[in-house]
Image (tube, helix red, strand yellow):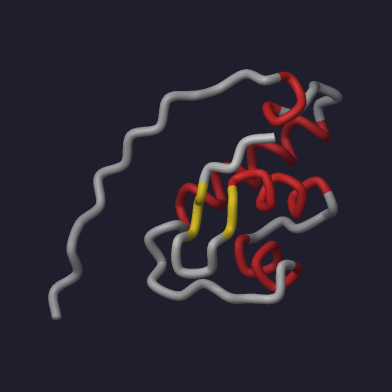
Length: 84
């Protein structure tokens, strides 16, 4: 399994979010709650939801999940600073 950190505030890995999605979490809030935490700064929310959606689509469509199949996607994110 990959040990890529998805949320540095809570030290949550991509694999933990994938497992939460496979266990039924449909939202980031539900996935994080299942892991005993909640979102902090919010920088991870879009990517975490993307992972959840991908995993749930894989389950519904009968396709192997990316965590199982080993396929990877390129991820580039533009993060904008919020005005104080």
